[in-house]
Image (cartoon, rainbow, N blue to C red; front, side):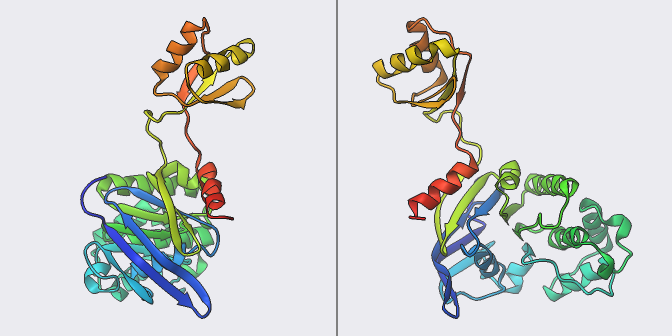
Amino acid sequence: MSGPPVALARELSKSFGRTRALDGCTLEIPAEGIVGLLGQNGAGKTTLMRVLAGLVRPDAGSATVCGHRPGTTAAARRIGVTIEGPAFYPWLNARRNLLAAHRSWGRDLDRGAIESALRRTGIEEIAGRRAGTYSQGQRQRLALAVAIAHEPDLLILDEPGNGLDPDGIADLRALLLAERERGATVLISSHLLAELEGFCDTVVMMHRGRVLGSRPVRQPDHERSFVVELASADVGAAAAAFERSGHRVSGGGGTRLHVEIDSGQAVVRVLSTAGIAPESVAPRRESLEAFYFASLKEAGE
């Protein structure tokens, strides 16, 4: 990902009555990638998305999307949004709902854009039916069709997997990856960590209206921590060899060791000196679940 940020939030604050939804939230979203928002219920994810989409105004702070102030016509033409569940005219079919939704945002669609969006979201065959007859999953697909029809630069998707069956989740993943390939940026929230891990490039952890931190989903191989799988009889001797050479070692469970060391080649070199052959050596990658709970622990939860 490169170039100027596609969305920027600076010290955003927003309260609803006595509830502080955003509390000095600062976030920079780089262009051309999929960014996932993590956090407990009430962390501020949806409110942040609503501010960026121009649906609510912050009490303090500033934001830009695609170089424009959220809520302006210029910004609306560059973004696609699904937030807090799809809402459609139940007596209109999918095609007419698409037109109505885009006109409400000040955008026009041609027939080709409509048919392409319906096809890519898998609802082309039911597009002539009234939206009031759709299942929750079908309504969610229609919401995605609305979001992508005008080929926006930024997609803001709040829990887009809600109501989708496993086939629908697979289709969603393929759709988002295709949008990234097209050059779009995707900001997505989900309470399903595995869902985000499947297609995000970066995840951002929110807590009590603030951003706690971020990390790439696929950690680079040059990170200085490795998982070493050994024959059970070699575990103790291998741990001692790493410690003698000045490397921190912890148990990875059973026949595994976690070693802080510069490279996989260095792992093999230490073990070879001790006359030990490892079963396997791989970079240690922190799961999203581990990142999630470590972030909460650091925040004092």
